[in-house]
Image (cartoon, rainbow, N blue to C red; front, side):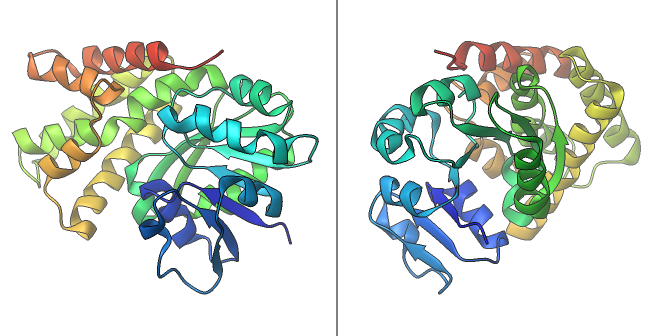
Amino acid sequence: MKTIGIIGFGNMGSAIAKRLNIPLCVFDVDTLKTSNLRDTIRVVLSAALVVQESDIIILAVKPQDFVSLLDSIRKPAEGKDKLFISIAAGITTGYLERALGNVRVIRTMPNTPVEIGEGMIALSKGAYATDSDLQFTEKEIFGCLGKTLVVKENMLNAVTAVSGSGPAYVCYFLEKESINPATEKKNKFLNEFIEAAQGVGFSFEQATLLVKQTYEGTIRFLNEMNVAPSQLRERVTSRGGTTEAALVVLHNGGSLEEAVRAAFRRAQELSKKE
């Protein structure tokens, strides 16, 4: 059996660990996040040890922490046949491949409802990853966290703008209408959201999957976690990020399509390719 390690134990890393009922190796610089875990999760003292002791490594740190992370794991990754799975927005597979030496990389973009197993997760593979790497990542890891969609990597910024930031759009809509909007208003919102997703390059079928799963996952997250839409909206809105760019447009009276385009442009600006 392949061993799986997780570097970064925030909301996404811990959500993945919770759903993977197998032995895991984990590390986070904040030791409070990795205290009192189940017996099958082994906590190690560094990111480098996770790489040394795992066949598959999930990189679940924030994008701004990637440079220091890659410096710390470059040596244990060098020349080893390992699969790296990244969930960081804007960090391309090419960037990781160059930093770590032509390693196998799967890049993913999950959204917040993965925490309750109702996420929307897009995946793409790097130059050295195999089809079986992609299939394993999709079915065995993220398949238990929600619905999945395989896309070309050049569509992941659009994914970020649609389903990544999408829970905030749903919350904004619910704050304006109600937690249980009338069917007519809900359908109007969903149709506008689907059109907005098509506007950044998705087919109707892809857009429908991304939007409907984001909507339903967000509703279920609010109910299960017992949080208000305003609380979730604030939580998923990072200063200077894609969601903030979209919400500025909505607050100023812009359409959902304009908001998604603003988020898409911001995702492109933040993408780390070099």
